[in-house]
Image (cartoon, rainbow, N blue to C red; front, side, top):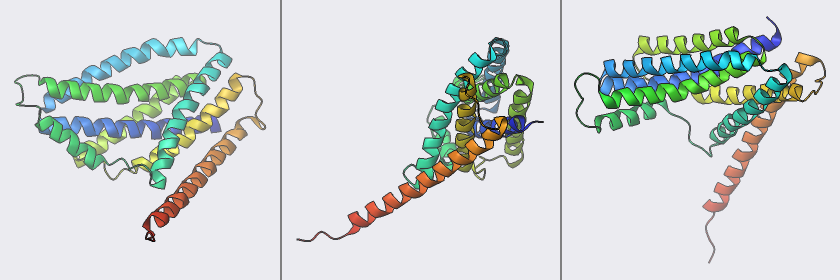
Amino acid sequence: MSGTQAGLVVAVFIACAVEATEALTIVMAVGVTRSWRSALVGVGVALVALAALTAALGPALTALPINVLRGAVGGLLLVFGLQWLRKAILRASGLKSYHDENAAYAEESRAAGDAGPVAPGIDPYAFFVSFKGTLLEGLEVVFIALTFGSNQKDVPLAAAAAAAAVLVMVGIGVLIRAPLARVPENTLKFVVGVMLTSFGTFWGGEGVHAHWPGGEVALPVLIAGYLAFALIAVAALRRLQTARDEVLSRPVRA
């Protein structure tokens, strides 16, 4: 396995683990509060839709010329990764609240409890909430797996990493029967932001015929560079936040 393939597996696994954690929280909340049967049916229908989408888009992406594919995928990953990285920097610096699975679970449970009595048979609320949550988070899983896999001409490897991440998270959820609050989700999002941004830059450059010094060796350098930038940004924002708090806390002189 090459370095790029190893990076692909790690990035896909971590990113998909984050999405699976968020989908699992939604499904568990409506399943426990309303109807497990309806929630699981919603999950099943969403998985069928995602499988059909993957089957349709996978061959189409791999049929594109490699430079066109890498340019397009690199640009998408760069935009997607920068969004993750921006939010991760804001959370780490204290300017944005951390994502809390316990709080998310409690909120979903309250909403499910306020939705009225559980309908006999398939409960529409439990079905649609589980379907929507699984579909939306699953679309990100499909996007990540297809873009990484098609760019490396190895969709099966990316799909296997994505499936492994989902199975691991679901397995943990079944075992503990509680939200995965102990999963370091915010740290994982920070890592994913760095990885997606780095791969997007690398592949986007290749798509426009840029020649990276050392070839694949440039990828770890990009990862280290973006990580250093993100950590410096976090430290700088924390200092600004501290300085602002000190100014605001000073007594106003008459």
